[in-house]
Length: 198
Image 1 (cartoon, rainbow, N blue to C red):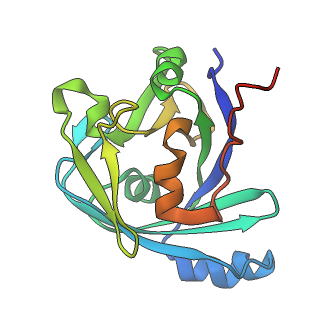
Image 2 (cartoon, rainbow, N blue to C red):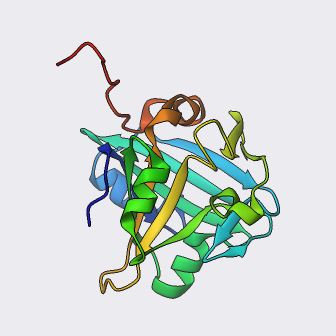
């Protein structure tokens, strides 16, 4: 089963205990100096993890470009998130690959029963849909559930049978403007689709 409509890689995500430690070690080794660091707050009831509606949480994220690739560091601070659970279960390291898809609902549906939407806005589960926003400090609010493109523009998915643990994050390409407004050009965005190209 393939994910339909992948239009490009957005970033590679790392779960970390300390953004500063990663920047000082791997970041320096790779010559990365330009980091965008943001604190992100999620209110009570905004997110679900394995079907459980989560309480309030906060994390610090850092984005950087390395050649044609972007990396994200996620450092959980408060509350339960997919990253905090991952760090407890597996420790720091590569956590997810994030891909832009042209239609998130269609891409998630195509993954089938062998894949779980393990972490997402609660609106991915219709019985818990509520219009909320995450607050990206320094950039304002970023709507996460529901929008004109559906119940949130991202979802972490995981294979139920894979022996190599990691998450596949899918991002709806129709929401690139929302993501760019929050995180600027530190991520990789899909090329605009041009109707006039044959």
